[in-house]
Length: 210
Image 1 (cartoon, rainbow, N blue to C red):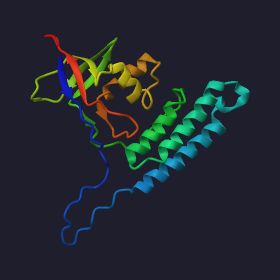
Image 2: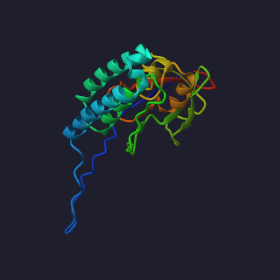
Image 3: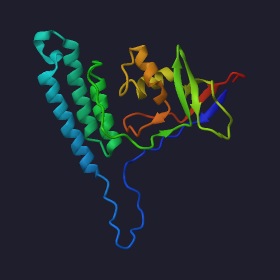
Image 4: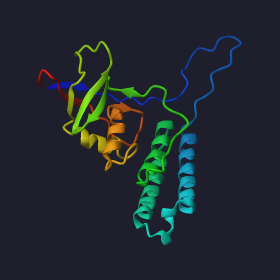
């Protein structure tokens, strides 16, 4: 069995601190913690109001008690997360978690910004049936190639368990197999979401054996 270290470094969007040349303008300051936190708080409340007013499932007359419960629970969770936001990844994760938790595939949070350099473990995973396999990797790895290897566990937990936590709350409805397959490549990629843990070490089985 091959063990691979998995690291997670938050990829912030702040500007690099570079020397200012004579006559050049300094780089603009990156948005502050207060900016991202207040933006998260305001946008959570705006989304909640819009959903309460415009989504058919929010109307008691429609009899969709499950949606109304998801909306109230999701709102409470999003409010709690928004109060802890410090940067863009936290802001994006808060809104994504709120939208995804509604259980309605027609409701999604799609930020206009994306982290330029998400952190990854050097491998990309795909879900193929019940198996999670390496389908792409960083070239020149000192430990050797893992192409085609099956991911067995990370920190003693199965890929399915990690996927439910890392992907199911933010990118996919974990009860829908197609969405598991669609989001599986993000399993070992970190976009800086502060509300999920990241695995520290993963075990793979290669074609040659453990």
